[in-house]
Length: 253
Image (tube, rainbow, N blue to C red; front, side, top):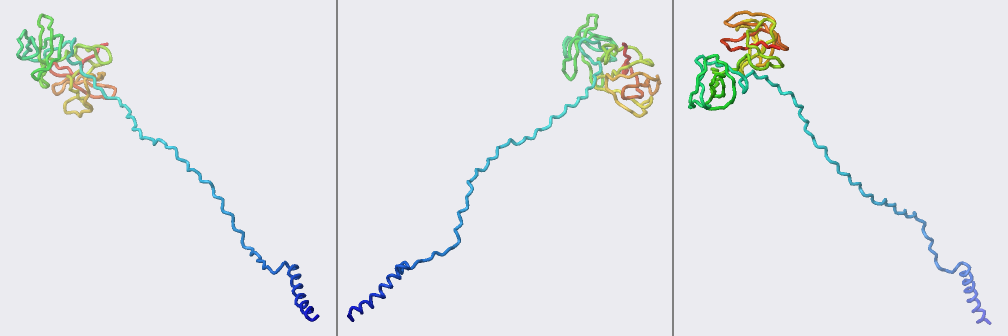
C-alpha cells in the first residue's frame, strides 16, 4: 500500500502539471511581436518624362537695307558738236579740210573763219585731236580737227538746234525781257555775279543749258556786255560773251 501511495504522490503532481499545461497551452514560450513603425511604402516614382526637344528655329538673318536710289544730278550739255547740226569755224586763220581724220590726209579744201558748215560724220579721235566730217554746202566735204581745249577751231553754231525745254536758239543779240540759255562750250560754266563787272562777287557757276529771264541791263563794263538774269534758283549778272563766242543765247518759242 505504501508503495502504491508513493506512486500516486508522484503521479498526482505530474497529472496536475499536465492539466495546467493543457489549460495554459503548454509550456511553449510565445514571442510577442514588437510593434514597430510601419515601413513606409516606397515613394511612387514618377515615370520619366521625355524632355521636349526644342524645335529648331531659323535664325533671323540680318538683311542689309536696300539703299534708296537717289536721283543722279544730270547736267544739261551745251548744244555741242553733233552729227546733223551746224558748226562755225572759230580758228582766226581758217581751217584745213582733209580727206581723212589725220594730219597726214590730203588737203581737199580750206574753210574761212566764221564759215558755217554742217557736221555729217564723227567724232574720230586721232593725234590728240577730235575730228569731224563736214560739208560746207559748196562742194567741200572732208575732215577737220576741232582744236584743243584752250583753242577751239570748230565750235557749235549758237543759233542752231533746239533749246532746253522747247523752242529754238536764236542767233541774235540778247534783248531785255528775253528768255536766254547758257551756251558756253561743253565742259565750261558761266559765272553769275552780284553785280556787273569781273570784280563783283560770284553767286553761282551755272551749267550749259541753264535758262534765265533777262530782267535788267545791258551794262558795258570790263570789256563785256552784262545782263541782269533771273532763274529758278539763281539771280545775278552775267556777261553775254566775247569775240563771237556767245555765252547767252536768246530762245525763241
